[in-house]
Image (spheres, rainbow, N blue to C red):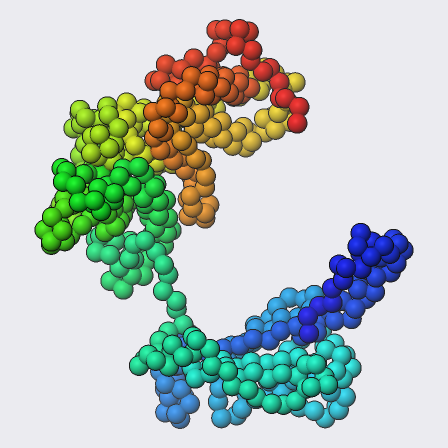
Length: 529
């Protein structure tokens, strides 16, 4: 039975009872709950096939296999989860064998739950118990209310409540899901549910890059990288799908108007070995490209995808270009070139980058993940200069602001955050937060809508903060009142932490207000909450 609860309708606000009566109700409720502590609340289970994973059990497996009990170390178990009132859940496995281990285990649970007073009942004192030990149970005090068995042919329900109508009657009820299973010729007996991920783990490029095996299982030490790639393309895919460029392309495709083939262009600054570059290129091709036969049949231009990775290491560039060449097909439009972040002559974004995405018939995306320190600022500035439509960065190594924040906290012992900034670990975290917050503000000043969030768990990578920026409409971007407010907040943030120089602000020509702080009305202390 469920745990007892207080009837909300008897509260003073609704029934007019006094405070003393309410307290008595709560005390009685606490006693009833304590009476149920350690007793069964819900027991659920399923049949599973388990394989013996021990390496040194070959002789035992052969013996059991010859006796017919098991096949290749595989055995059938009833896997149960036992939930208790006010106690920790417990898992219990009973092997399905000729010695009726399952029947014995269930008899113990039923005997204990029904409150048997007969000491000779099977295993009453041996029933699985919580950390509170075996609880004495009066008959019917915590009895079984109902039961249910779900099979491939139907759901069998046992009803024992209310007591006046209780009976050991089984009613077979077919559900829509069961009917659907019956209509299928074969049933999947796999216990592993296929995950809904944007990229297939068994994709050829994952295998070439040494991320996963032929059957899609991540190789040793690569499970975090695989998850990072999946989450990354999921985030960028949503940004692309919600862009005005894609919406406009879908409208034109529906109307049948003829135009030049539109293009999605991607630059990955500091691509490294290209895990994320290959992943994003494959995702965009699979989700936005129209096959050539459909283009000819519909007489409509197809959308193309061009991706470019930039890195300084020539040997690495040669290696990953070779992987792209070996893969061929959709990866023929993926190229890697040697160059510096933010300073590459052969960058994919051309002379037409000064106009909006619809006018230039391209969607330009810049990504820069884990570019060290001010390299992130260089990549953002490159994107702003070339009027990129989408910017995705995951900053790394925030070194530029740390000495400035250290000096500011040492010179201002009465700073509102003095008790926080006096610890080195908090100064490091404050540096990361302040740097990324300033970058987000500068991107908004440059005419972008920005978001800062954790894009993957800390167990996969410590540098898991992502900044995404999408181009605003021209009217909003040029709003003088909006720009004035953003610049004022940027200056206040810089003065609060003593930041006099920040690379992106310098590149954009944004004044942090140290020369005319009095005129700009800079806040010298933390405002009241």
